[in-house]
Length: 304
Image (cartoon, rainbow, N blue to C red; front, side, top):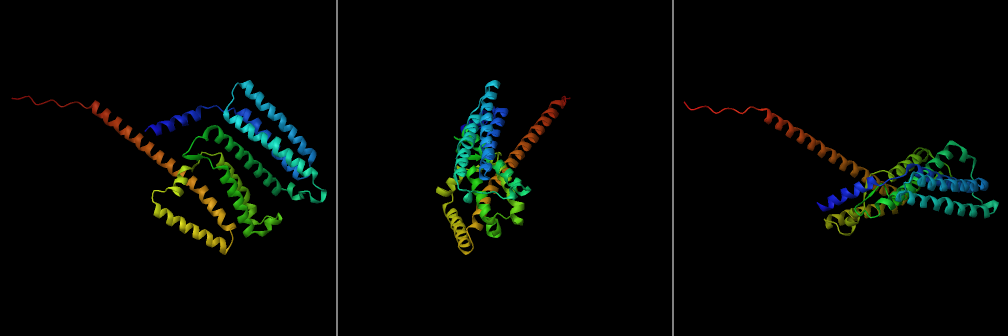
């Protein structure tokens, strides 16, 4: 009972903590121009990359100004600002320095396809994925670092690992992806999967944390768990050796992603069902009470 009250208290504290949306938008724009600077450096547009970093400095100053003017600072804003700064003022200048010192024959030249609809779609999904990862990490550091039972939102390592496994999965079935040529499967699936993973990182879908550890380290039904794990390990290793690890890793990663979605949907369904039953029970109790109050008591027959 005390644990349940503590969880309710923590959830209420989480809801009451303020988040300055306007300042966070400025920080997100700072992160956006940092990512654009990295893309420009890869495309040998060094002047543009440097300008993007300078624009990021402007938005980095604006987020602090907005927070001071509105007199509302939050732990989430501080964490997001730190994550954006490491990209815009750490990674982006490093990539600019690295690419500018490369010889012209070995520079990472970008083809004309980068300006096509395919290239723009890839850049858009990449930016969305990085921004959602930063938002997810900031939320975790500010509000959920002490939470031990579960993750709220898909963890960023799981999202990044699933995306990497999906690329390997596509390369197995469409080898032309290694030569920067999209096949039918990659063309229609890579961007949607990236967007779904990005949205799951900032969602309220609950993923297991300690439950997964207890299942592996100290399960309730040890023999059945061991038999299940042995079957899965044998199945995975067999198909990995017979075909390739590329077709094994992605289904395993997606199993974790889908498990969290299904478990969250099931828990919410049960909560709504319980709430509906409680509401119907209260309604029935109120009606019976009202009927009992309106009823006229019968008079006892007088003795003759």
